[in-house]
Amino acid sequence: MIKKKILFKFFILLTSFLYLNNAYAEVTFKNFENKKVPYLNFFLLKFENKLINRSKILSRQIFATRVQYSNIGTSINYDEKKKKFLIKIYAKMDKLRYQKKKYIPKISDCNQIRNLIFYGKHGYKLLNQKRDPTLSVDIMEDTFKNIFLSKDDLSKEEIDFLMKKIFIHVTVFQPIIKSEISCSGKINEYELK
Image (cartoon, rainbow, N blue to C red; front, side, top):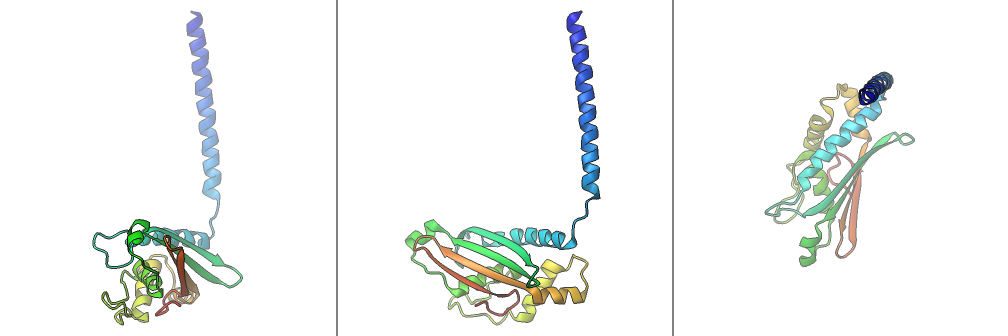
């Protein structure tokens, strides 16, 4: 009989605890639901998610047609003072591959990273690594708008404004010889410097 009373009291205590906990969770969710997120924060989050997904294109290839990377880091920030967006991409070359093959990163590697992530093309000819004119500034701009800006309910003026205010900085790091190269410029610039 005593065990039944203890079990009954425990059941009542547990039920009231769960009810109170549920009520607290509901109030907390209501507070969360009423918070407003600035559109800029929403835009940056969406853009960064898309950037992270698109950077997977730089994963190792079975048959290498470009430099192979082991790690890719991306971020996007808005500088309120300068009124511009800055995309940073950090690419670490594959250590195992480049222990055997001595390779120093070039400016074309920087540009290829940008081109592959944002436009889905190398932008350079495979054999001689010369700039491929088929990836023009107009094509880059149209591709960028379609991939990154088309589903955000932005007006043409807002998209044009953003295209002028988005800058990129790419760093390629060679871990064996501890060498790195960086390039930067506007997102749709023909060639980053």
